[in-house]
Length: 142
Image 1 (tube, helix red, strand yellow):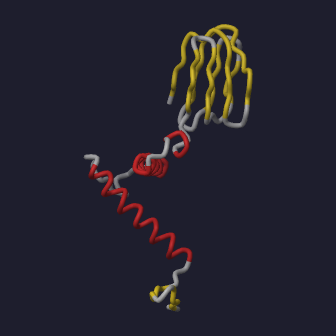
Image 2 (cartoon, rainbow, N blue to C red):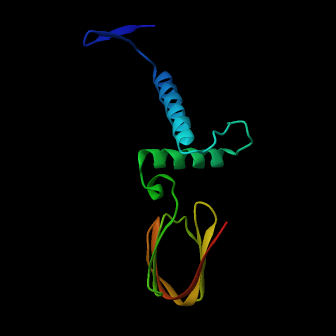
Image 3 (cartoon, one colour):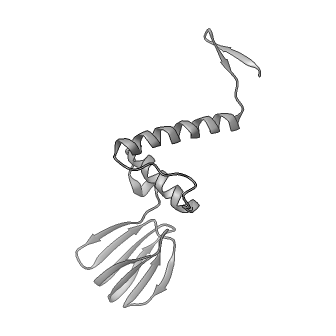
């Protein structure tokens, strides 16, 4: 393997894939130590968890470890409700159903159901929306 000299220290040159593998191995090691320090059981990759669940567990633990807000890393919805007549939703995945009495909004996991009267979408952006109206109930459905 080629060698390079940096500031008097001899280090090995690594390919990008070797570097990524090394970083991932170190991150998994740190993650396992962190999970153990929080009293959480270490999980095996071969326990039958599907890939999405594994990614969610790792992302949540890494966000917690690095103290990054979950809505940034995990793509989880963030709801801001003002009184009973205004709702602001971030990280949605589109509208499933829309009427003046019921809205169903797709999320990264499941959907959100809003029941009320005179519901209207005041602002709609690719991952944010603002809903106005008399909101009676809000349900998360998996």
